[in-house]
Length: 275
Ligand code: SAH
Image 1 (cartoon, rainbow, N blue to C red):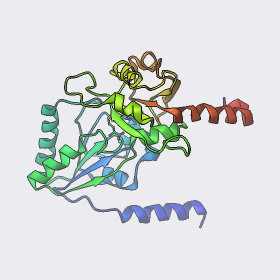
Image 2 (image 1 turned 135 degrees about the vertical axis):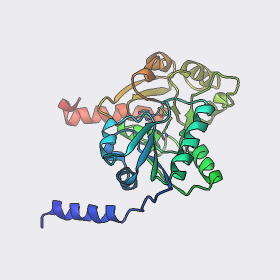
Image 3 (image 1 turned 60 degrees about the vertical axis):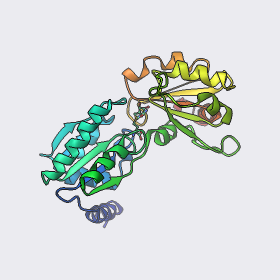
Image 4 (image 1 turned 90 degrees about the horizontal axis):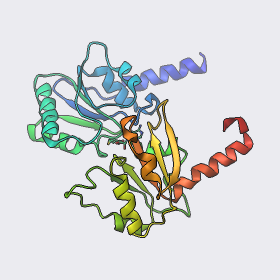
């Protein structure tokens, strides 16, 4: 047997041992940031078993090819924060589909519990007495940084990392204390931040963060259209303006961002045609 067929047999064995998605059950699964390579075996298995799939505006369209032919696809959820009425509708749909005895998959970008309203959805399922399972996914804030060659943590640079949402930063409900976050001196990874970045950047500077602090915009992380732009805190707002209309965007602010340049300088020295 060749190594490849050994591996294929091993993979089939592993897939056959994945948990079974039973009728009347809901699985809430993360699909990762976009690239099919970042799916978990459980997410792939769920896509092969589900009779109905309620999905977000997922970044990687290739992922859909893994859904069992004949499964019903329901688009549920916008890319950016949705009003709670819409969220209640999604939860109600999950409950109704499960009560109809179907095998239900709720598929979300990244990890379902990271800025994904997965908590509200399992609460609704639990309240309705619907059996469910949660399948973690690679969150954009982790996978997107790796894909952009920005280490999330680096000895001597940071001891913590902050995942924050920029959504609602200008509304009166915004409770995040950006000035205090600036004072921590730890990198900040902003989800849904491109619309509010000018306010956020201003507040970080008001909190004492250096205007020259490296900052990066990562668009469509892990997908074929991934684009990384490195700038600084003073200029990140103009770099990110309108970004999210094209592809989902992450903003990273902190000294870890400078690592990308250091790495690409070294890579260019070794393999110049890579640059
Ligand atoms: N649950 C998801 C996040 C949903 S909020 C997760 O764990 O990744 C949506 C935000 O996630 C987007 O506004 C963007 O900031 C970020 N995001 C998701 N996928 C992304 C990608 N491929 N590239 C860059 N940012 C991404």
